[in-house]
Length: 324
Image 1 (cartoon, rainbow, N blue to C red):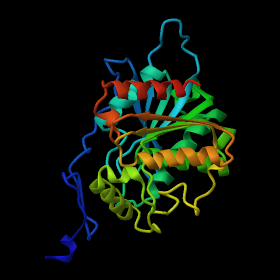
Image 2 (cartoon, rainbow, N blue to C red):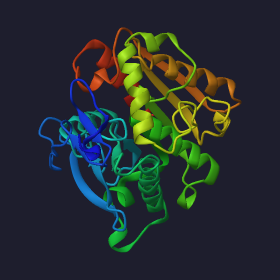
Image 3 (cartoon, rainbow, N blue to C red):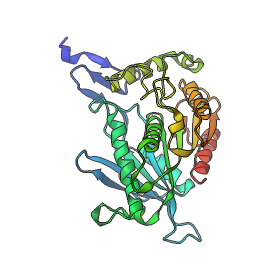
Image 4 (spheres, rainbow, N blue to C red):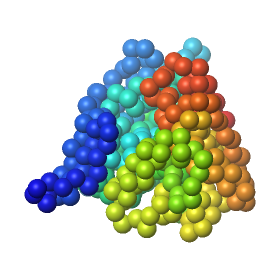
């Protein structure tokens, strides 16, 4: 076999395959859907180029006016980070586009869905750096950014006293790190994050937890995935993937006032989310934390079982959180 054809990461069923040569084959989450006015919800979306230097972009969403709303009425702002193990998907694929349409309609918020560059071509922490670029760009609108850099949906409709972060799986990992960066270095124009919603967070650790045995093969795959997407990592206790390890910055520095931690009862990562919630409450952080658990449900189930009772309940919890 040609050494360049050696496979260093693969999945069953086949979703992504990474070769030693650096070649990557993706079999899922590659088809984009255009921005539009969603006929089911009335939510409008459009795409923007945030950074010409890196090509980082985002998809913006705004809900239709409700009866009694004023056109100039300010709305909470949600900056969303999609999942996919840092290596799959985009802000533009139907899976996340449909979820954001639903979330924006029910929560009645302006949303910015960040489209970061993917590993392994752009190893972690590129996804985090790109997401930080998007978050800073959003916050910059609070200072009345003028000229072609201004997005009217943000400059005219966003309430920068109510800025939230959210994401699922790898996106929840990113949302956590964005809140930590904001807590340490702040955001442009003095913008503060009101809250962060972490949905089925992609966190790991070298310690064994009960939920890791729910699907041992999935746990092993997630650990291999991390090492592949972040080859510079120190391992499973790298603070980038384990925010409660001793080497990680104290969660007391989380730069927001509220946190919602959602876990699935049948998710191999369940106990990582629970541990994060406990450590946050014990850290001396002065905010308010809430844990939501969907009993018997697996990782990111809400994206695929949108009409089940547990998905509806989780959706309501997230929407309520965005309106606190």
